[in-house]
Amino acid sequence: MSSSKIPVIYILGSGHSGSTLLDLIIGSHSEIESAGEISNFIYYFDPLSKRKDKACTCGLPVDKCHYWGEVGNIIDLKALGDINVSDHCSFEKKNYELIRAILKVSGKSLFCESSKSISRLENYLNSQRFSVTIVHLVRDPRAVAYSHVSKRKRLIESQGGQGYKKWLKENNKKDEQYLFFPTLKGWRFINEESIKRFSQKPEYLLVRYEDLAAYPRREVRRILNAIDLDVEDAQFEFSANEHHNIGGNRMRMSGSHEIKKDIRYINELSPTEWWMGTIYMFRMLQRFGYPVNRKNLI
Image 1: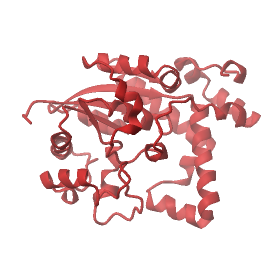
Image 2: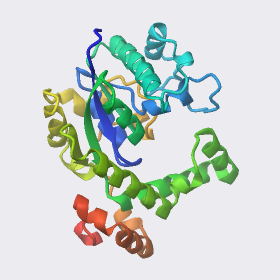
Image 3: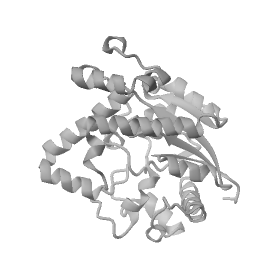
């Protein structure tokens, strides 16, 4: 690969907003390779990482995966360390070399990343080695908060209280990330900052999860049109394609390519959660076109 700029599609937004789904769809294009939440690289490849779940989307641990093995033959993955570095020169060098190796192994020419980190995106934009298309993915904040709370409940039920605390520590998470109102606060910060910093840039696209789930071909076409590519049918049968993403939610391992809008939150949030969440997020709900009343969402 030449030293020309690497085209990057960067998925921005809060967690539990559908980034894994969008990442799998985009990464199923014949010209685009996705590595998922590459910001989590250190937890998968650092020899000192205590993370137990180091599975590639192919189902194998990353140290047993042939794909990452080939990438490792080009660049020493264990020696890269933290690629989320604040030093711009180091960030640029490490990420450029890593992505160039990934594209060489995949044989593709564009890279998609779903890390969602604002600081990583700013480093990409400030670099002369990358050409970035920003996809700002948003989802109804009440749905996002519900999803976080549901995950917390599921983990506690399956692992017990102490097991859940251990999981938090191993995955560098905090309990507050899975509580209803702290999640809303985090959603508002991330999306307000994203609008303020990036929405006026010509390479910025806004996509709502609800629209992606309802009209996937239309929304993916909007993204690909920005980089002069056509939609491919194989993108919507993404589970039939081999993926080697790291990070992301459990759907990447499900083997299903059903695209279905998750609306459980509409009926399952308590009246207090619904109305307190709606009042707290009212301005942002208006900004992104989300109705106030439950009945208008069904």
